[in-house]
Every structure is written in structure tokens, then in C-alpha cells.
Length: 333
Image 1 (spheres, rainbow, N blue to C red):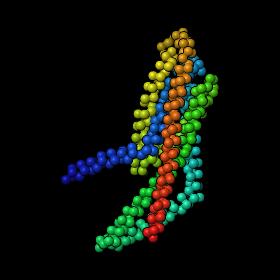
Image 2 (image 1 turned 180 degrees about the horizontal axis):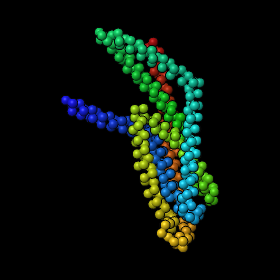
Image 3 (image 1 turned 135 degrees about the vertical axis):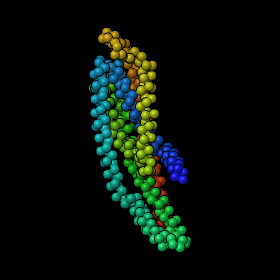
Image 4 (image 1 turned 60 degrees about the vertical axis):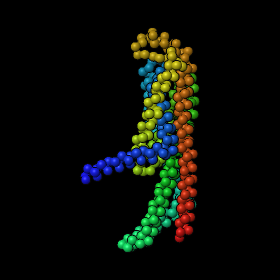
């Protein structure tokens, strides 16, 4: 008998995991955020892997150690600055959203009225249920139905809160991902080392500024009970769709469009200089590799902008639902 109970619990646990995975994968906003996150991861990994030989091929540096050190410093510093600024911008956006919420009395008083009605309905239904549970009459059945309706209304309230939070996150990440793509694209067209590195730093800083909002948005795309698994799944997806295939793709493009820009640690100084001279003829190919990389980054901007549009529509739908619920509550009274 005990083994049967354990077996039922394990079966229920497996079913609940698959239901949880299905709930996460059925969230359209989750896929948008995951795709944007994967695009970001792909570009960062590809750039850090092949950025230094590309800068050598473009004539910005002669020594690979120096190029790798400078590129690593630029990416690291951009990550520090961008992430901190992104967190601060998200905090400002959330404070602004809270002020707007207080100013508008939560959708012109709709939510405030809903919350009062929900509390009153819950207390009333609980009292009726307690009084009629002994006799099991129609009043008890009505109380149960009232409690179920109250629970549905509370779920609608929670969904509205998540929708507003998602909208705040998507405003920040869509804006800075679009700015980052533009700045990054301008940077790769620069002909001087200083402007190239400056543009690269500014573009990457904007891209890194999306990370706090992206991490929070992942959790807001699903109900609270699904958030731990959602974070794990988005991490898996950013590896599968992002930083794992991107170095392979960029390596193939570099080999095809700039075959003479391959440098090896086994080369002596004479061979290295000779190969570097040959690479000058393939600089246009290296530029195209960077252009394709920036276009890959454009997927992030498109996905985050799509999330913004979706969140705006979601907020609009939840607002209409709450207004409808308020109207039904007033009619019932």
C-alpha cells in the first residue's frame, strides 16, 4: 500500500513537470524573450571568439595578445557599465510605473474597486460556507461557487500585475537593444581603431543594459510557480540557439569570405607578416563578417520590440477583463 502511494506521487510529479514545461512553452512572450536572449548570447560569444583576429586583419593591431587583451577589456568594462546602467534604468521605469498607477488609481479605480469587492465576496462566502457546511444546503454550494469566482478574479488581478511588469521590462530592453544594434553597426564601419573600439564599447554597453530587464521579463512571462523552471529553460535555449552555434557559423563565414586572415601560433615572425600582408586583400570580407554579426544582433531588437507590442496588447486585454469583472460585480450587488 505504501509503495502504491509513492508510485502515485512520482507519477503525479512527472505529470506536473510536463504540464509546467507545456505551460512555459505555450507562452508567446517567453519565446520572444528567449530568442532575443539567444541572439545576444550568440553575438557576444562570436565576438569574443573571433574578434581579435578580425581586428588584426583590419589592421587595428599587429599582435594577437594585444588585440585579445584590449577586446577583453572593452567587453568586460562594457558589461560592468551596461549591466549597472540597465538595472538603474529598469528601477526608474518601475518607479515611474508605480507613480502612474497611484495617479490613475489603478486603471481609474477599477483595480481598487475589484480588490475591495474580492475581499468582501471572500469574507461573505466564507461566512456563508461556515454557517451552512453542517447542513450542506444550497447556500453552501453558492458559497463555494462564490469562492471559485473570487479566485478567478484574483488570478485576473495577478495576470494584470504581471502584464504591467512585463511591459515595463520590455520598454527598457526594446529601447536599448535597438540603440545598441544601431551603434554596433556604425562601429563596425569605422576605419580607425579608436572610433571602432569606442563604438564597440558603446554598442555593447547598450546591449548589456538589457540584461536586468531580460532576466526579470523571463520570470514575468509565466506564473510564479513556473518561474524557476522558466529560468532554467531560457538558459538552455540561449545555449542551444545562441552561443553554441554562433562560433561555428562565424568561423565558416570568416573562412569563406576572408581565407587569408587565418593566423596560427606556430607561425614565425616572417610567416606572420606575410600572412598579414595577404589578409589586407580580404578586409572587405572581414567587414561583411561583422555586418552579418550585427544583423544577427538585430534579431534581439526585433524580438524585444515584439515583446513590447505583445505586452501592450496584454495590458489592454487584462484592463478590459478587469473592467468587465467590475461591471459584473456591480450588477450582482
